[in-house]
Each structure stands twice: as C-alpha cells, then as structure tokens.
Amino acid sequence: MESTKNRINFNKEQKSDIFKILLKTVGFEQFLHKKFVGQKRFSLEGAEALIPAIGYAIEHGVEMGIKEFIIGNSHRGRLNILANIFKKPYHSIFSEYSGKTYDEDNILGDVKYHLSYDTHIKSRSGKEMFLALLPNPSHLETVGPVTQGLARARIESEYKNDFNKVCPIVIHGDAAIAAQGVVYETIQMSQLEGYKTGG
Image (cartoon, rainbow, N blue to C red):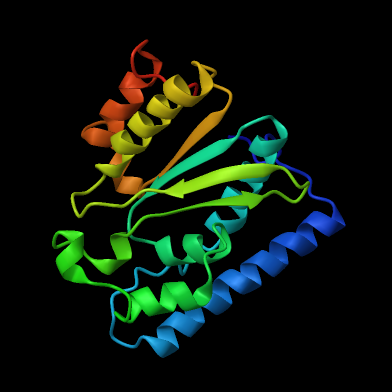
C-alpha cells in the first residue's frame, strides 16, 4: 500500500480522543502488570492501537445501521477489550481475574481469561447497540468460525437475512493467516451462500 493512500485524516478532536483512549489502554495494562504480578494476563502491550481501531470501527458501523457486533479474539488483549470497548466494570474484571467470582469447576476446565461477556451500550451519538465477546477456547483460532457462525445465525433469526445489521469482528495473530488452517478456511467460506455474513 502506498504511504499516501488509504490514510484517514483525523481532525484535532479525533486525535485527542484517540490519545485519551490510548492513555486508558496503556494505564490499564500497567495496572494489571503491577497488581497481578506473575499471572498470565496476555497483555496488549505493543498493540494498543487495537482499542481505538475497534472503537472507531464500531462507532462507524453503528452510524451505518449495524445493530450487533460479535467479537471473537484470542487471549491477547482480551481484558483490555472488556474494559475499554465493552465498558465492563473494573471491579467485575478484577474479581473474576483474581478468582473471587470465578469457579473453575463450573467452566468445564477452561481458564478465567477465556470467559465471554455481552452488553447493550450506546454509541457516542446515542444509538443502542449490542456487543458480544465470545468465549475463547484453548484451541487456537477456533473462535473465528464460531464468531462467523453466531453472526450468521443472528442475521437469519433476528434480522431476516439483512446482512447489514450484524458485524462479526475476528481478531487473530499474524501467523494465523499463513494460507493454511482454520483462519484461511473461514475466509474461503466467507462468500458461500450458506456461510457468508456480509463481509
């Protein structure tokens, strides 16, 4: 891609908003690092731009008429997404993460940083939207087709096949899209009649 093409020109207010979001994102990671020393937390450090990018995509999508966002991502950055995109209360995140409200016996042996969450929130313009972060199984990249499948089911059952109402967002690592495996296969199925989700 050319360095001068496909570049968004943010105004001063947008740049200020992005900076504030990045400050919250970095501050959250630093707090986790100090408070939960030695625990696996799958930090977003080095990829903090993901949070304002997802936030911008969601805000823009809502303005285009999207009602639901189904997000599937691996471990990295999951807690930060819960805090800064889903607005999950910090006390809930920390209670679960510290083990106070997490009962491993009821989660079928999976780990606490794979838990799901969904919520109804309002966009900056006041439009209602539904956000869902799917549980992430320990099997690498299986969350992708699950995300696509749930989005397709919601499109069919709730919106009478209107592909403009549900947006699946799948976040994966760089190595996951090397022309083989489940991510590649999910992309290959994206335009098949029975599987497509509109993206």
